[in-house]
Image (cartoon, rainbow, N blue to C red):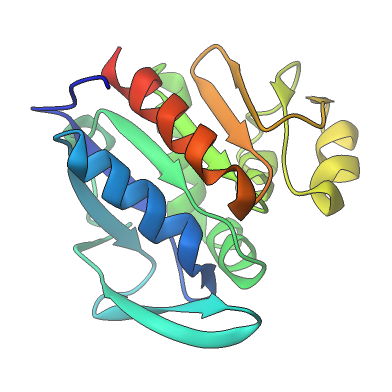
Length: 178
C-alpha cells in the first residue's frame, strides 16, 4: 500500500452524503497515513444517509469558505443523492473544486459525487464512471462515461457505487501518493 504520510486530504461534503462513501475512503486514507479534513458548507456537524435513512454524523473541520486549496494535496467527493446537490449549489464549493483542477491536484469522486464535477466544468473530455443515473449527465457535459469499477483519467479518479469501495480506496491511495 502506498504511503500517504505528510499528505493532507480535503473531503468536501454536505448533509445527505452516503455514509459508506465517506467513512470507508477516510478510514483507508488515514490507515495509509494521510491527514483527512472534512470540509463543508456549514460548521458543526453534517449527517449521513444509510439505506435511505438519516444516519451517523461527522464533525466538520472547516467550512469551504475558510478552506484553502493550497493546504491540501488531494480532494475526495463522496456521493449520496442530497450531498452533491447541496455542494454543487454553493459557489464557494464549486470554486474550491475548480482550484484543485487548476492546480492539477488529484481529485476523486464516487457514485453521485461526479455531479459536482459537472457544475465545476471539469468533466469535458474525461473518461469517467459514476452511479448509472448520472451517466447521461456526464455524457451531456462532454465526458466519456464507462461502466467500470474505478476509472482514472489524468488527475481524476471516479467510481460507481458502495460495492466498488475496495477498488476505489486502493486506487485513490495510489493516486493521492503521487
